[in-house]
Image 1 (spheres, one colour):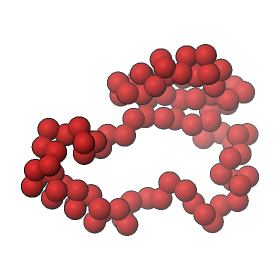
Image 2 (cartoon, one colour):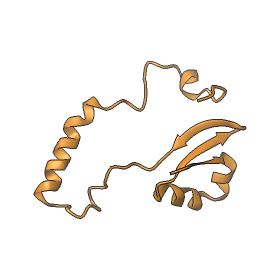
Image 3 (cartoon, one colour):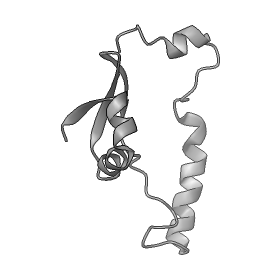
Image 4 (cartoon, one colour):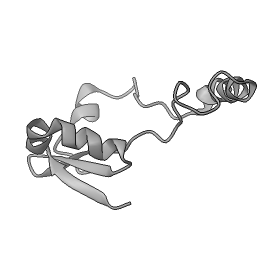
Length: 93
């Protein structure tokens, strides 16, 4: 699916529409002061409470596999980076 570019002002003015786009699988690149800030997309993982097999043995097995793989995932936050490195809006992504 194509990535849509929007500004932070557009998010403030139409938060509901922004969230609806994310919910329907749209990738969104957010611009701040004419520079790319972040690219967002909805998580692809199935919500355990909404899954068709919720409460079954296969759902429990899936949950256990998910938890076992957590240590192998790339961390979202890097504690070794400075505040400036994490939130520098002048840096082009």
